[in-house]
Each structure stands twice: as structure tokens, then as C-alpha cells.
Image 1 (cartoon, rainbow, N blue to C red):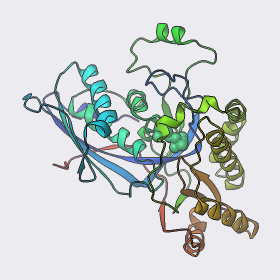
Image 2: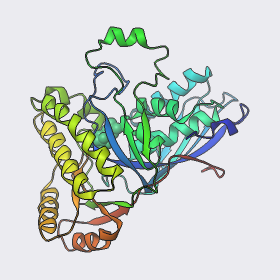
Image 3: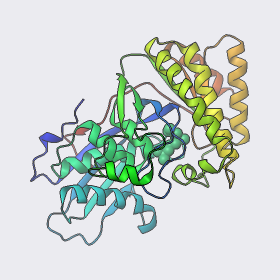
Length: 359
Ligand code: PMV
């Protein structure tokens, strides 16, 4: 799949992209390059890109050089200097690639609430990368855009593709920092650690049903958490187990087998949270409502409902089931006192460039 950046001529200054968020079945947790911002993961991860949870972003590069700084507006709120820093760093990557000094205006809207347990950094950095590159006339295929998006937010590398996606760690076991640097032709477009589509969005009508139990902002962001993974004595055990889990998840998705997929996605979510809880300092993302949903899912399964859970870096629980089970799961979730809101999405496409702009 190629993102149609080629349609943006070099005189074009503005572009708009829409990208879906994603939910990981095998998680990305922990970086191998703790001292840098390359986001090289400790293990491969596999996710489903979401159709109904997306970010739309317009990027306009100021060729007239009148704009003194980059401006970033997300969901109607202009970001101050510190919160905008990660986005400005990503705009710097795009400027370096194009060899231009222009500042940018960025306006971005999520169609889902922040703090919902849906990763806005995945869809946000994917949409920013695609729109920012297109508006500069950079002609990059989806693989190179995935490498670039990864440097903004690791999980964004997977949102460059629709359907079911695997992000390859792509940096050999035991390869030292020096060896890796020597192997790099260009750090920004080094495509060894990138995502690729394993099946498109038509392959399997799975549903991600998100049980929102708390809207409180998390105390430690996932980017901070990745740097702590190595401090957990359980980290090596989890990354060791992931090898077999990846094989099972690939097989389960290929065969559309929920009873093969489900136990593994639960095992990895629990292993990741065990690593988080035993990091130094400890990261405890769960709230009482998180446990209420986990116990309910186990009870429903014993009662014959094929539904499984996974949890990202937050308290909200993602329930994974097939489309035919979704209405029943949603009804059951609404009956739990801890659940404040339920959001559902199926698999969706990769990023698109839109003809209409946000400003
Ligand atoms: O891309 P980040 O830095 O927001 O990390 C994402 C981490 C998890 O959501 C917990 C797991 C994953 O693979 O998406």
C-alpha cells in the first residue's frame, strides 16, 4: 500500500490526513534505545487498526516565514510550549527531511474522547506524519512513513496500515548501539523497525469494545513507562514468552480463531501489567473498576460468551470479540456499575489524505 503523497506537488503547503488508532493484541512495552528517541521496541507487536476511533489533522507549512513558532491546536485547545514539544520535535524531523526552515500550523481533532483508553498518540502521530509529509511534497511510501511515525510514538508506526498489522522490532538481538549507528544510512528513514499489514480490514470482523471505568489522566505517560520496563525483574520473562505468543496470534488471525487468539491476548496484557507493576518506580494503571470488568469477562466466558480482554497503559479495558457477539457484550457491560461509557470499533483502513482541510 502506498500513501498518495505523490499527489502533493512541491508548491502545496497544506494537507489533511485521517488515521485510525489501533489496539495491540501483542503489546509494545519497553524500548531498546533508552537514551535516544528512536523508539526501537524490545519485541514485535501485533495490532488491529480501528475504523471508528480516528484523528484528522491538517498541517500548513508557512512558506512566507511570518509564523515565529509552530502552533498546535488539539480538539480546540492550543497547546502551550511544553505539551507541544513532542509534536514540534516531529515537525523538526519533517523539516530535516525536506531541508526547509518553515514553521507549521497544526490543527488536529479526535473523534473519540481523550483519556478513553484509545491511543490518541497512535492515530495522532500517524495523521501528523502523513499530512506533514504530503504538505511538504515529500514522496514517501507507507513503510518510510511508518518509520517516521514510529519516532513520534511507537504505536503510531502500526497506524500507517489498515486491518491487522505487525510492527517488526527490526534491530538484531545483541546488536550494540555502535553497530546499529554504523548500519544506519539515515536515522530518520531507517526502515528496519517498521510495521507491515498482515491482513486487510475485510479479513475478520472483530470488535474492540472499550469499557471506560475512569477518565482520570494517567500519572505516567507510556513514553515514560517504556524507559522503566528494563527495571522490572519480569521484563526478560515477558519478552521471552512473546516469541511464542506472536506465532499463536499470527495463526489465530489467519484462521479467524477467537478461542486461539483470546487466551494469548489476555496473557500478554497481564504480563505487560506485571512488568509495569514491578518496575522501579512501580506503575499501577489499574483502578477498582478495571478489576470489576476483568472478573466479569471471565464469568461471562464461563457462561459461554466468547469475549476476551486486553488493557493498555491505563485503567480502561478493551474487550475483544467477534461482531456477532458485540451486542451481547455491550449490553452486559452497561449493567456493570463501574462502567461509565462503552465505545465500539471494528477494523479500519490505513491513513487517507482528505480533500477538505480543518482550516
Ligand atoms: O506508542 P506509545 O508510546 O503510546 O506506547 C503504546 C503502549 C501500549 O499502548 C501500552 C501498547 C501498544 O503496543 O500499543
